[in-house]
Structures are given as structure tokens and as C-alpha cells.
Amino acid sequence: MSYELPKLPYAYDTLEPYIDAQTMEIHHTKHHQAYITNVNKALEGLDALAAKPVDDLLRDIKGVPEDKRQAVINNGGGHANHSLFWQILGKGKGGAPKGELAKAIDAEFGGYDAFKEKFANAALTRFGSGWAWLGLDKGRVVLLSTPNQDSPLLQGITPLLGLDVWEHAYYLKYQNRRADYIAAWWNVVDWDRVTEFYKAAKG
Amino acid sequence: MRRTRRDFLRTAGTLTAASAMIGAPIEAYAQAAPAPQSAPPPPAVPALGKMTVHTLPPLPYDYNALEPYIDEATMRLHHDKHHAAYVNGLIAAETKLAEARASGDYEYVEYWSKKAAFNGGGHWLHSMFWKVMAPPGNGGGGEPQGMLAEKLANDFGSVAAFRAHFAAAAKAAEGAGWALLHYRFTDGRLVILQAENQQKITSWNTVPFLGIDVWEHAYYLKYNNRRADYVDAWWNVVNWGQVETNLTALMGAMKA
Image (cartoon, rainbow over all chains, first blue to last red; front, side, top):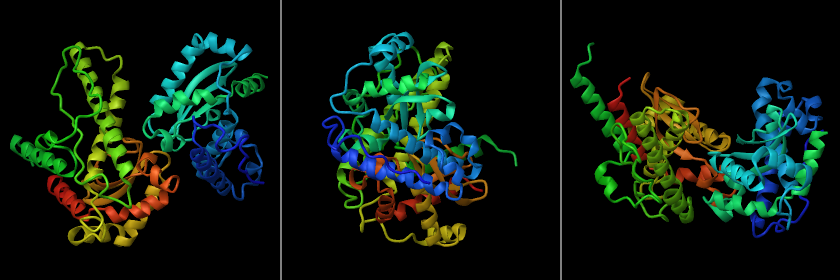
């Protein structure tokens, strides 16, 4: 059993003009695919591990032999992170969280605007390659950023919303202007989907 | 052997000269540099200690000089935006640390120390990077010669083995980082190390004098995800003469 590239829920140009079609295509078919190819390679001969959903693999990273662990963190993480990313994006989806999730964000961050500001700051101050996240940590919503492809699952935090700030995620259209990319990205965040993840994680 | 003050000054002077050769812009050089984008304001409160005026060094060639291996648009962004940001970031961090010394308030010393390391690393490595490249066929490309060729062959088995090792390290660097060739002054040999970001997985008894930036901003516009193609192409612009000059300066300044 090996991991496979999930299909995008939309076309490569659906998120234009906020995220350009060329980036979507390269990001999906090259970068995400490479993570999958590499995690499958790392788990060759470790069938029990390869059969696990990638999220479970990351939640229990100590179960991966030490000599393969970093490769799995990097590439299993890359696979998990991007699989989530494609799902929380969508055309015409920008807006605000509603219901339970909105209440949790208000309580934790002091409102949606305050949350956006803190999230953008986390994304901007993640130097080098990494991600900014909204996650669920023991029933509470939390904001964090991680380096490279480190998944919040490694820390026992369930990711609900993620923003890829590796340069490959924005360089063709935004070049060095990461702040512009972040500002544009809010227009394609699918809060309904994020709420689904929140409800599922809360249980 | 008891080190005298004269010994210290002589070594420090040679080190400064060596670093100036490799990358750090010296004052006269600095006059020609374009103003950094949005330079940070001067310290708001008294700052304690000498403040270096860090400046963005000019490229030794035109933005399009490394075509077709490194594209003009990338060179413009990389130098004028990314490197400039490291210069500004370093000035800001050092200013804040100087203010902390003046006020005695070290609440944010960890934050600004990290910023100083990141931006200082970025400024130094990029200053070195521009200089170890040259237009293909006009200083760039070809084979290392003389003492450098001998040293590479000696320390890595052969020049080809050095190239293969260096390229592999560059291609395998996870996320944003560098592959760097260092001079290790404790035993006088060359070593290949990666850097993560601009300042991580560093080493204390070595100084890098040749490097390739493998942050995605260094190659994405032309090569997209194909970092391996960028690394393979980059050899065509390596200025082996400058690299040898760098090594000679370091070997002179820091005897094993």
C-alpha cells in the first residue's frame, strides 16, 4: 500500500487571481507528488507503517524507525500538509467562520479580525520555509507556525487550517511579497470546510 | 607562545582583510551601494557600543550577466529585495541590542539575537555569493586551477568527487538553505556543510568561502521546482578565481 496524490477538488485556475494557475499546477503535480514519492520510498519494506493513514503516521512518529524518521517527517508531513491545504481552499469561499468555530476563535483570539492579524503575523515571521496553522490542541483552538514540513500532528495538535509559506507557494505571482500573498489568500479560505475539520477533531 | 597585543592586532587585521575580500563590504565599496529599501530609523534611545553601518554591496556584474543560467529577474529580486531585507534586518536587530545595552532592559534579547543571527547570516552569505559568481566564459565556469584544485582533490579525493558531494548536499537541503564549502582552520582542511535558513546547522571552527543559495527564491522563476537543474547549471557561473582568492585569504589569516 502506498500513498497517492489526491485529486484537487477544483481546476488549477479556479483560485485565480489570488493563487495563479501555474503555481497550483506545479505545487500539486510536482511538489506534493515529490513528497508522496519520497515518503513511499522511505517506507519501502515497512508495510505496516505504509498502510497507516499519513496523519496517524505523524501522530505516532516515534513508531517510525530512527533512520527513516526525518524522511517521514519531511515527506509524510509534506503529503499530509498539502492534502489539507487543497481541501481548505475554494473559489468564492472567502468570508468568515460561523457558529461554534467562530465562537471559539472569538474566545481565543478576541475576534476574527484579531485572529487574522495574529495568523498573518505568524505566517510572515516564519523565516525560511514553513507553515502557519490554526489547530486544535486538547479542545482549544491554537495558532502556531512550524518550519519546513513539520506537521502540528507531531506535537499532538490537529491542524484545521494551514497556509503554506514556502516560497514555491507564492513566488511566481508574488515574488518576495509574502504579505501580499497572505492578504490575497483569505479570499479563498473555505471556512465551511475548516469548520468540518473542527467538528470532527472536537469529536 | 605568549600572544602579544601586536599578535592580536596582526591577526585581527588579516581577518578583516580576509573577510573584506570574501564578502563584507568595506566603507569605500559601500559608497556605490544603492540605498537599502526602507532603512530602519535611528535608535530611539541611546545605543551602547559601536554600530556598524551595514550596506548592500553592489553586484560585481549586470543583473543579466549570469544568463542563461541565472535569469535577470531573479538576480534583481534576489539582490535588490531579499539581500536588502537581510541588511535592514541586521541593522534593526543590532540597533535593538544596542538599545538594550543602554537601557539594561534585556526582555527581548532572545528575539533580537535570533534576528541578528538570521539576518547577519543572510547578509554575509549573500555578499559572498555574488562575488563567487561571474558571467559564463568571463570568469565564470570552467575548472578550478592551481592551489585550489590541488586542495579540492586532496581533501575530497578528486575535484569530481567534490563537485558530486557539493551538488548532492545542495539538492538534498530540506527547505530553505545553502550548500557551503568551508575552510576549517583547526586542521586546515575543506569541508562541505549545509546551512538551514541563513544561520542554522552552522559550525564554529569553519568559515564558508563558496556557496550556493538553494532557497526557492534563488531559482524558482526560471527552474520552478527543478532545483537539481539549477544546481547543475550553477557550475557554469562559479568564479573559481575568486574562490581561490577567498581560500588564500582565509589560509593566510587563520593558520591551522
